[in-house]
Length: 634
Image: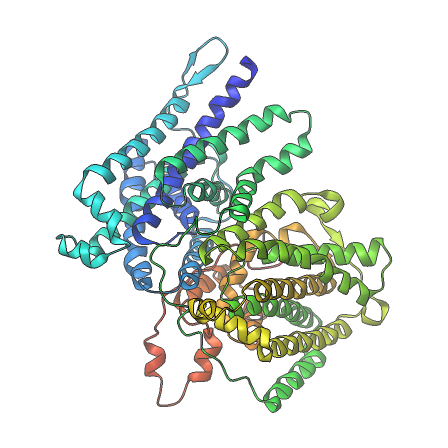
């Protein structure tokens, strides 16, 4: 038994840091009704601030700690509350999710621009002395972290139960008027809440960086594991969230000992344990047990958009054909990549635009389709077109699996379930070398008829037209009308006895199938596929980019793909400008979160004398996230 003690201690330490991050999530959600997907991004920013002050500017460690935690952390919280989140009162859950995803993309991309993407080592700042307990040497730093976690929990519980401000914070999400009558400013309470929440996120980041190093991905991913603990506490119970975080830390640590003889199993399963718990809990939780706080209207602005005339559509197809024959080989390849990405974005926009549901695991579906396509055409000798069909069919069961929680969960918890599912696929399936080829990926082949880029790009243009045609048929069908009704008036449609089961299953299946097909086309264009193309943070980025283009029509998805993939090619070899792509899309998603029409909707509404309506948008900002290109790693 003594052999397990060091792993128990390490699990308590890791779990305590998870607990600190989870309490910050619960604190902000139970007070404001807004779940912050950018919690890990805030943690990263404070971690970079601490490192910059301490290591780069040689500020004394205690002063650097105080400045980063009690100045930078709260300041970030107040700024995002006043500039972003306060404008989301009464907004739809979809808009709120998009804003926080956009903020994560903006913070991650901005940190890469300011600090660079190279990992940094951070020297420990807590005492490294140990206490010899016979079977284990217990570090003072470990004891300190465990104690900090307990102090945070007890302090918050006492604060919420005993202080007038704490009681007002608990009430503000349900009844802001009553809080004002009690002599409190709802806006000031909101700012205090976000200052506390981001301070806790920053504390988790500062405690983590000496253990794992500092970059724009690792710390965010570690804090994301706290989502599972917060969800086990239903995003409202601090005690359950704390205990769940401790338990997750213990399970993660003990798995190192239990599966010590199976390194492949440890490397695949251990990082995925919190996400397995997250998706498993949300997939099987009893309906009605989880409820959203402060939810209001459907996605504001989700109105029917008039499709482009056939003459306009034919004109754009003609422009595409001309581009295929006029572009240089280098730009032709980028043009083809944009077309493949457009097919993928059409499949994602179909789900978001028609049902109002946010799927954060779309890269898992697309990546699965890409890998299955390569195995089918290269390893199994299946003809090209049949390989594409097999890729689409293989992904549909995953789409149906994601649809299961969609039948019982509110929008926020469905987004969290898909996020957990995507991270599970990252950790358990895409790390399998026989399936994905590991770090090197897999090499794809094209049929001889389409072996050249020009021929394959023409084929992609035809396929994109097919994708758009399928979406048009669905929108005009009974299924499409039912989904729009469920999206815009869920209570009314339920009162009328409309069955939600089959429409939701159908749209997830169609979106997944098209996503798998798009993954095959994507792999064919690049003639390769790697797990680095399809990580879950790329999925967050895709959601932000599609929202920028517009989810109301396939044309918005096409616009988004070309803005992401082809517009940077026009900049030329300017790395300084290319680094701005992620933060720009993040900021764009923030601005357009409450406008499902996106940029396309704005462009179509522009009239010479009607620019005032565009200068005062009804929406709030939404940042981008993760990796934005085929070779970035999230």
